[in-house]
Image (cartoon, rainbow, N blue to C red):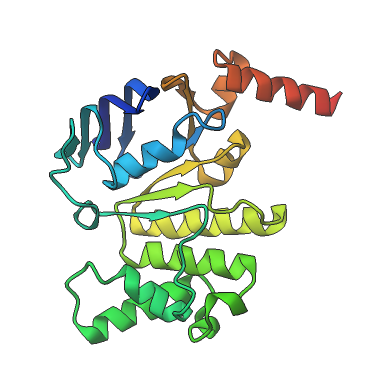
Length: 248
């Protein structure tokens, strides 16, 4: 299967703090990957590099075989990478309605006014919030705000969707429902998903592999069942221990 994303030997540091050192990762077309690991381990930084918000200090990033980032350089800007990102804080504009927030997400595409509105409206409908189109974020519940952020990301029809723990704070029923719905929508668009999460079990709702980012590199990767059988990272060892203690 062809790779949609290739990260090779990427390094990143802020001052004396090294975030990555020799990080490599491949994602196949239409493949979903859940990235987990300790807090402060660089998971969000990795998504920022993939999105093109920052360049790596070393190494290269390719999307669909095209070099998009290399040492100190961003040859392809964020809006031309064919991806979208949902942040943990959602990043909704408080003075704009739900529909206007989605339209802002489409501003980087060269669409005429009518098809741009049609696509934004369709994204809200797909996320089951069409009736909230004219409401501003402060009038929406947490779950509704999450859906607006997701609609904004999906409206651009990304080849890769990046998710930085966007469902933190939701109850488990709503979170699971949104994960399942997002998976269905991304599957329909043939999009790959990279999601950062502290809970490896969420991979099941995405039909995703798990990649453990620890000590500046991917320490292990595979299905959840494979990693649980013989966890080699501290993250998965601690998670497995916690699961066993809870079931004892």
